[in-house]
Image 1 (cartoon, rainbow, N blue to C red):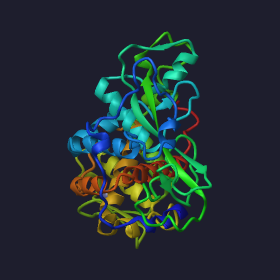
Image 2 (cartoon, helix red, strand yellow):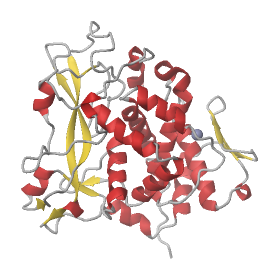
Image 3 (tube, rainbow, N blue to C red):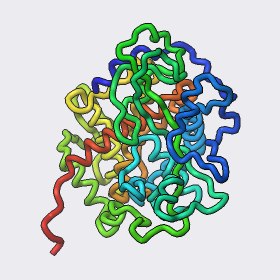
Length: 376
Ligand SMILES: [Zn+2]
């Protein structure tokens, strides 16, 4: 994607990321009685104001904490949560994207919420409902590009690429941040990409919601009575990748544009075969003919591990969508330590990874083979 190209400005120098603003490592919650349920512009406008929340760092810390639980743990948690579908807003129905999805999935598992429907405090109030006293919201991030006559006066990202879109992380993470990048003289566009916090509450935390707010979003239900294997096959079949069997482990070769897999009977289960094939299918979406994902310029030696993180996240999105939980991706090396290193050194990396994973997920979903006319 074109947006990647301008990421070259922000590699390699040893960044000194202050931790003091997020000393607890937990996302702050809105103060009781006056929740900040929407973008908190006052904070970003305050620039260098003392105590300004570093949203990217707070969210990165949170996701690092998920990954540090270990590969099997976070995979299981994500796919479990994902089997309830992508998190959605209960008022608008809009799905959340990117890193917000991971944050909401993890919170749902952590607190045992059965629902994947979320609201801001204000949205709940606007429908005559009330977030229960003492309930904590989940910190999410909203990116917004703002034109500005001054450079970096918001103390936030300066970047010229990509347009923020929707509720997600469009364009985010490929940008330099915090004025440390040394590119501030290169004002391609006079705009800043603001990363603004907002807090979401699960419908399970809200009393008095009208019946019009679903307690589960529909896409979760549509999959419950279908076979996850059928779902996997419809995605793989719809993408029509070049797959060759007979290898000792799963891999994708960008040079040959080929997915290589062990023979089906070498897997412990059909589910494991599908999960592994879908993981490789996410790599396949990154080919230059498709989404053209390359990370070398930005991440250098860590680029390979970073692509693995994208594949891991993208695969979790797909597995969740088809309800293929508890499936192991077999024969694939774990890159957990490398991911953690990248994320610790770069507080925008997780937004980039989650955005690319979301694009891969959408790419695969768009190619799904249609359902047969009827089961009968
Ligand atoms: Zn892989």
